[in-house]
Image (tube, rainbow, N blue to C red):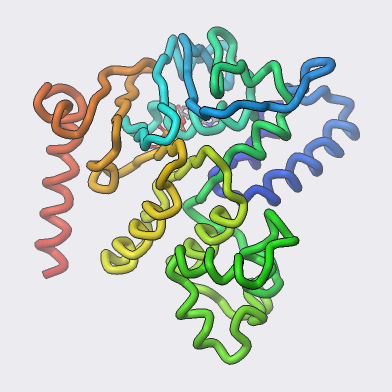
Length: 301
Ligand code: ATP
């Protein structure tokens, strides 16, 4: 049963693919006569909140009941602020993101958005409030315009171009012979990793969700592209509740709050400076990553 959930590594998929895989999964459950794990509560209403803070309250969770991944995790991502989740590999960072999407239910404790327990409202409405910029964006075999506007197909040409400008992909698109009508994907123009990510950012700007989940979207890029993407991401994140799942620390120094997860609980939290000052796990991870970075820069020189 657990294996069926493997394709739901949601951070690798854009929203429509998530929905598609959910639909496919529903079919599969139908065939196998298995009940999906997460269902809307009877009579569940849509999520309707103004301030979209995200809170984990004493959250316990394990994919396998015999092996807990989160063991009483509590933190708050404040509305409109940037919260980064860091921690050693396997600590449960991506799991936190999957739980916010409610691909699984917590076994104890609660996750709330603006004070509402996400189990009390429809899954669809929770997901409508969430935007994801995944590490690896899936493009449809269609035009750039379609790829940017699909969360809101009624978006006007102007809105699409404005989103592309914010995401710093407009100039690139304008220079293509077919502009926004250029076909991309398997059968069209192959975009680079950085270009695809900028399309994903433009797409999320069009969706305009109050909460953003960023799976540290800059991993496989050269440093110039990374800097450009970070600028677009910052424009996107401004004024939204953003939760950054960070696998490297250099990109989240400016976060309003850094939550360090270890052993299934929050080991420490604070700003970059505060955590360095504490000399704990974060300071150690920072030191490790700084020396790796210095070595890589030295080897590249
Ligand atoms: P990394 O920084 O390496 O990406 P992470 O902190 O994001 O790691 P998670 O992907 O959340 O870690 O995984 C936390 C734990 O849960 C790991 O021990 C992992 O093996 C386990 N795990 C993750 N996904 C599943 C799954 N679908 N089924 C069973 N166990 C899983």
